[in-house]
Image (cartoon, rainbow, N blue to C red; front, top):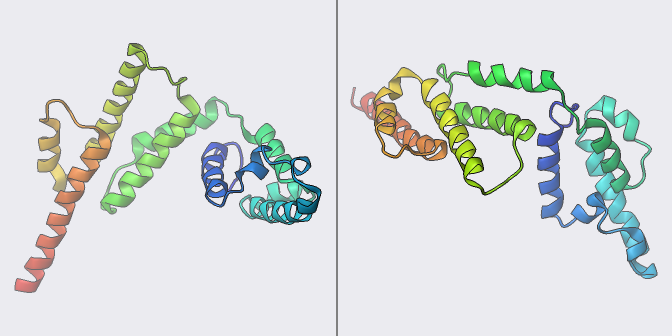
Length: 202
């Protein structure tokens, strides 16, 4: 649900994928305009456009909905939302950064912990990422970012994962954070299965 500029990029990514899956992205980005279809198909275009507009409006919060409720073309809604909310300032980034730094597993499930951390990383990267170059400096920056994420993930795990955390840190070269999550997940399954076995045998 779009609530403002603080989650516009995340919302845009999600909604764009959804429209692409149902082959309606052309109504959104303007690549499939009404004037480009045959006269006999304009009624179908109108009907599909109304459906897309309805989906747009159902994915935005009430106070944003009020400003877009009378828009009749999906592309117009997209352009107005983009112009209004594709903006951020230092406070938006500042609010994400402490969330990343303070997040700990603290007894929550491993999957929930990792997915929450991953969503914060992606949101932060969306605001701060550099242009995608393939030069050596860019690759080094990405490697550095991946290393920071790995350390953040491992350092906030519960103490029950101390051994597998040590095993990961002893790898040479170090693995990336997604592989680390897979390794810890296997350990998590073993621990849970071991706990269930102990309950059954006690």
